[in-house]
Picture 1 (spheres, rainbow, N blue to C red):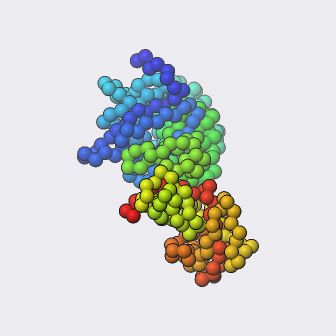
Picture 2: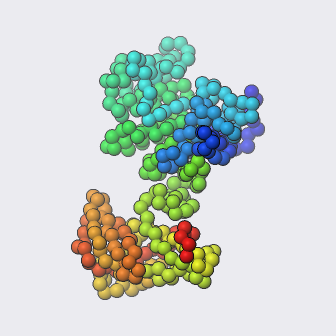
Picture 3: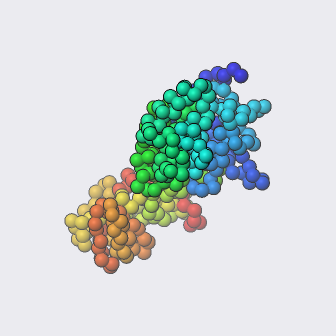
Length: 367
């Protein structure tokens, strides 16, 4: 089959992919592009359609509609549906799926073609890259979880796939091992130059590994972008909440202004009487330690100070979380403070917020 006209540098291109089960749409109009050497993460909660999307690209699930193009060749579309082995993709799943009766070398060589010498040269090359030289004769049951993960990675990369598809590949690993194995995996993937599509439900993993994140919800991609952009410019309240804890200050827009404990906020574009949610992350709720109880002098950036009453404080190791009941309206807000800060309940402290770190969204309440 002749390649399609080159319109983008994408090694993997998905257009309007859709899938239903029993009349329920689980993936709806998903489109994305991944270039060679790029890592894209499909991020979202369980049941949002991300694994189904991955399985359709792999060829183990058949879409109802859409197109899948790899290196300019259509592998799925009207009248076309290539089997998985003809798509040039590598697959890694969370259970590793190693063959228990084969050695490490046998597992890595399983999908390779060519003579024995050529295959063993590729096996040894990859095992060296994943720091498993000397493990060729071992069987999967003799390996730790991290070692099994690295064997699965080497096996998936052995045939030099153009696209690597990874479904929660680190979820079975101990937290102490996970970061190091993620970093080593990312380095090897970049060396091999495959286009990588990684499915995860963990925002930290997506932020750590991805060049671009596609945030999914209810079968749709609701936001796409670089990790910095998608974190700092969330598309809606749910997107902000998926990446971190948030505080939500609810109000009603009147004359493009909304009253809050921290003074009036500009809320242009919201009709009079419309419910408004002003969102701020705990790390951007500031406690004035120098003037506690005296009333801090506000700045244009911080706006009007407001006083809160400590409800409880918890130390989490790297930071402390302090929960306040605001005197203005009785609402609850949480601040995170680096290190140890454990004020006693009923302590009154002045708080300020970084207005440039707030997000304003339409509320879901009827005013």
